[in-house]
Image (cartoon, rainbow over all chains, first blue to last red; front, side, top):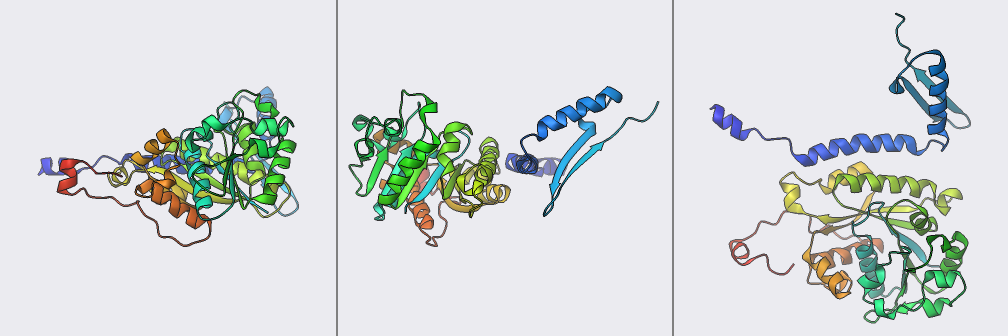
Length: 84
Length: 272
């Protein structure tokens, strides 16, 4: 019985792994598609300024730009470390 | 006014030149006056795939620099009426390809031809961006494989922002997905992305599906675009693709697993 189950158990097909990985990377790419060219630089410099005051990790900062009809909103989320 | 179609992909080696040659030839065989232009300055290959490498005298850059007339550089295809090839330069600097120069060449060709097919170089740099800049339609050649699909998505991003149509806020470039080197047997065994997977991830309209085929290498060996080999699966699949580009509704073929019969298993698959 155990042997039968073992034989029946299929390894995850490589194509479905490929699909999952691509869906994530493509969603990420598309998120960046509409943002202005200066965004990566802005993100980097903002992080530098924040780091002058608080030690935060690279991934503790989240920056996004949303555009409505006639105004754009720059959203900056920084997760600060808990006070010791 | 000609319709300008760019054949592009981002990733190299997925079948851009094979597809550009086959599609341009297919359009001409259907009676459309067609010219196919190689934008791959320094690494030209379209002339080889079209079988006219020994007849190249002048090239696109000679025309742009005013060293030759357009009619001197255009090569008339020997097999197909209505078809001309404009080769890329093998020796010149890529920077000689200027937007103004390309625009002028395309404008002149546009008066005389029905279709202008631009064979893009790989990558997303200068040459690739110029090849797509003036396009009305884009054929994005994609293999069912992770790096090719990701790069195709990058190209879709550029088509939506770095083309003349995008910059002038005109109707966007029409994007078509062309899946090449598709192997239904590997799809069935779960080791290759299905065409639905690729279509779903890239979210554009499928214009054709070219199966992995021995006919493609045979065609490039001989310098005869594979669409001339109508006994082959790839030749028929490219002909279907051309029909769809021309607006016809043609059912998809060659995407299903073919179980080999006893005879073909014993004596090999036969000619594909």
